[in-house]
Structures are given as structure tokens and as C-alpha cells.
Length: 275
Image 1: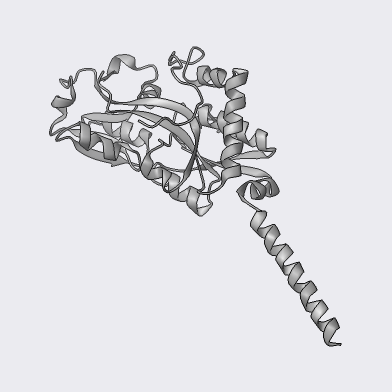
Image 2: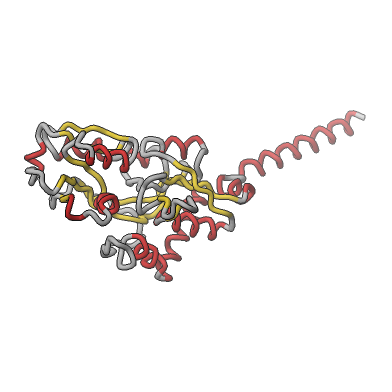
């Protein structure tokens, strides 16, 4: 009887260990596949990364939307857009509200301690925009002037190091910062050059972008810390897009020759390079 009880106990323990082992093996990628959807953190007013192109359909489109769809297809699930702000990109990822973070998340050593990054999927210079009629010609002219930035962006760290004496005012999104500039609440705005050009749209004669860059940013896709298989899935997607030429097609659709911006692609999807 004692032997039988011991055998049953041993069997139960083995079953529990097997269940524990299965739970240990289950990771974010498994959870996403089980859920059937990939939650992509994107901006809600971030043209041309993610925005509503047609007010009638209210469908979101853009560079980040296309990348999200590509990653979801690679994994074999449906894409799900989750709207985030610059200030919540990292915390939404850490809390599980999103599975991956796009929305122009610059790869920095500080952020790399909080989340993991994919290879670079975008690169951009950070510049300052002023009204075309402004007397501001260089960074020296920004001393004592109000400069709109985006909350949670790397601009909050870089601007004070590069521009002396500017009064940086942060806003929840690029659209909010641009509105403040249009309304005359600030004299200038700092942002990724691609974002600034996207905001300007067909009003190039109304605004002027200073030549001197604040910073050059390498931009990756954020993934929850320690999820190596998820990082690999994203990187495999980016590699496939680059090799097939679809990476250039996506860029051209939103930033390049097929868009109103007519920008040239000066980067490729590639690993982060230490500055």
C-alpha cells in the first residue's frame, strides 16, 4: 500500500513537472499564435507612419501599418492596431497592452535596458522647423524661443545638449506639436525630418526646416525584454522584406517616389550600429 501511494505521488509530481516545463516553454510568440492576433503599438495621428487616409472609411494606413501586417503575416496571425503615444510606447509594451512597439521608437542605450529592439526598420535625422517668415536661421537663434517637442521622445534628452537656451515644450503627439506651431504658441518645432515633411504636406512654402540636424536616429521595433523568439520573428520579416524589394516599395509608397514627399531611401533594414 505504501509502495502504491509512493508511486502515485511520484506520478503526480512528474505530471506537475511536465506541466511546469510546458509553461516555461510557452513564450510571447506562442501566446500571440494562440490568441490569433499581433497587437502593434502605433500612433493615431502620425502621418505617414499611421493615419486615417479617408475620413469616410476611417481605415488606418501608413508605413507602420504595412510593417505590422508583414510581421503578422510572417507569424500567421491577424494584425491588430493599438493606439499609443510617445510617452506610453515602452510602458504599453512592458504591460502587455501591445506585442510590438512601432511609432518611430528610436533605439537608445537607455531604452535597450527596458525593452529589446529589432534590427533598424527606419532611420531619420531630427531637425527643427520654423515658419518660412521666421528670423530663426540657426540653433543660435533659438535661445529663449519656445520649441515644441513630443513627450516621451529622445528629443527631450538631445535638444538641451545641442541647442542652448531653447524653451522646450512637449506635446502628446507630433500633430499636437504642429498645431501649437500653427497657432503661434511656439516659435519652432523639433521632430524627425520625415515626420515634419509629412505634417507639412502640400504647404512647403509656409514652413522652413533648418539644415543643421539635432540628431540622427536609428529606429527599431520594440519587443518585450527577453523574448528572443519574438525578436527573431520580427527580424526574419524585415530581412525577407529587404531581400524581396518590398521594403523599398513600402518606403516609396509612404515617403518616396509614389508619395507626395518624394524622399530617397538612404537606409536599409539592418542591425543597429553603435554611434
